[in-house]
Image (cartoon, rainbow, N blue to C red; front, side, top):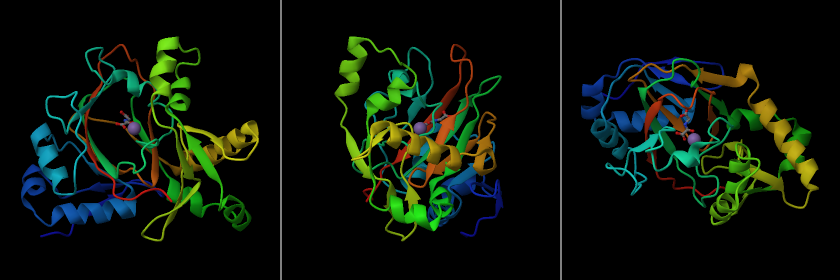
Length: 275
Ligand code: OGA
Ligand code: MN
């Protein structure tokens, strides 16, 4: 088999995969590479109400590459995204409602992720995606030239301050224990495509007045995530969404964090440094 039928979900990002059920997901050995290709093309793949369990999610994702493992969860390849106080990772997701890519402070960020909705919010809690390849392509020639050598500093503190503007000493100490990472603003990928690298971890631009750099980053984010450039997915229980973490920003729309919303994420290890 192999060929998959798709339906585009928006102009710049996303496609629904129409002809894959659990049986095909687990048994069509050509599917993983077809999905990786579709991911490169569309940025986001939606498997609507596929209802896979954790084991099926891990089995399928493993065929696409090495998986990130977390010691905090019973199945180390399946991370719970929720604000449940019992979730050991919950505190790290407080700024998930700001545009970001995962692992901005990593030397080699995660390649992609698969997220399955287990419990959805009554209201809000959609996940939004915007292409940073499309954001680069939309720059003027003058901007492409001006941004070519800019470098951006990314820190965990910058992410966290967006939701905790007045941190405690303990929070600050935790945040400062994370690595600080400098990335180019324009990433020329191995594929030859270019994308912009910014998001909630982006603190400032090297060698530029801090305020001026922040304004430039905010302006780029506004343009990249203008409503007509965003795919907003409203979750049903059992939906699985995969995203290319390298050419996209994503965020969760606000919802009542005291009520349950639980997603199970499996993450593919990256194999390309940002440069
Ligand atoms: C993530 C993430 C957004 C959401 O899993 O990395 O940012 O909608 N999730 O839960
Ligand atoms: Mn994320």
